[in-house]
Length: 121
Image (tube, rainbow, N blue to C red; front, side, top):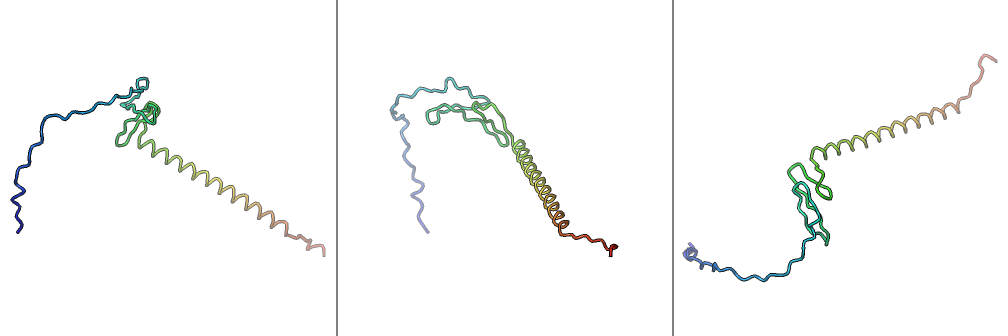
């Protein structure tokens, strides 16, 4: 069995006096003229002020000033509408192709047909 009595020894308490910190000159915030709506936060990104917009579980804000709201339902509706649009376009192209191919083959069948007057003999 291993001796664990050394684990109960009290550790020294760290000092409570604050350590001096060095202050550096702060750069002025250029976000003063940028207004972020809907709880957006202005941050500096590569030297330019931009808004970081609020996000929830199934919603989010977007736009230069967080002025637009998007939801999961809108995203799903957009995806469904896009998919149905593509499916509809494919269906139209398929139907037009089938009609054109059928006309082409019907025309060829008529060209090879030789008609003769059986009664004239």
